[in-house]
Image (tube, rainbow, N blue to C red; front, top):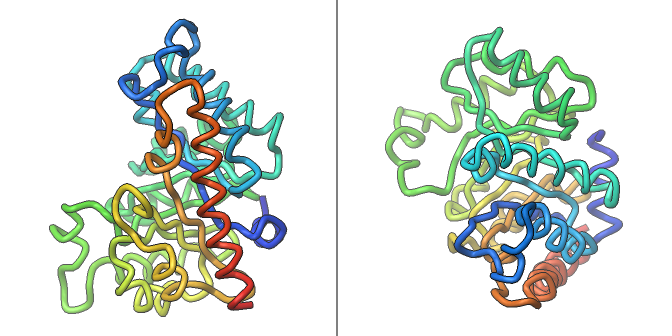
Amino acid sequence: MTRQDLIEHIHIKGSFLCVGLDPVKEKIPPHLMAHEDWILQFNMAIIDAVAPYCVAFKPNTAFYEAYGSWGWEQLEQSVAYIKAHHPHHFIIADAKRGDIGNTSSMYAQAFFDRMDVDAITVAPYMGEDSIRPFLEFEGKWVIVLALTSNKGAKDFQYHGAEPLYKEVIKKVGQWGDSNSLMFVAGATKAEQLNELREVAKDHFLLVPGVGAQGGSLEEVYKQSCLKQDIGLLVNSSRGIIYAGKGENFSERAGHEAMELNKVMTRLIRESV
């Protein structure tokens, strides 16, 4: 998916919502557990319910890898379902890969060639040769961890005369452009997103942490929006997919996504 395609989809939907698909067995509605493919059944129901209100989906691969080869099959089938039934949605594999060059090349083939997702999250710690192979796939996106929303972010990301997360953005920004590179920017750090935006310039930001982790959608938009291009994908996972626990779980998920969509539409209309 091109940058322009993504921007157009955002404006058509009036939404920059990304929904995380992170299945946890203990939280799956009991009636679905009768199905051998309960992850796929859960995901399909969620996907169909929230698709009218979001522009992207982000399955976190750990929630599938935990179940071995069966879990990986459920992930592949979930991605295939999105592509078949909601082909205009942006798909992010939240895999946080990053290794020496030849290993990264294999990771890139696995996600971009075999699974055919639009983007993958990567960790930049090992430097350029660990990220470069992901950038060699035309039409695909690399989303680099910069400022994360977890408690341990302070252990490394703020160190240095200039915070390390800014150094990461500046350096990685030399390896690709805004048509292929995004950065992760934690929503619980909304007061710093303005500074981060100054460094990231016209790159899209993937912003986790809205909802269950306490991030403010309005503050995120105010601090980091790119006006006409928007330049944001704001992710919500638990707050949407586990909004309901019974047989109406997908309806509840759709309602939560719709409520976020309403706020996003208003913010877009007020600013562009």
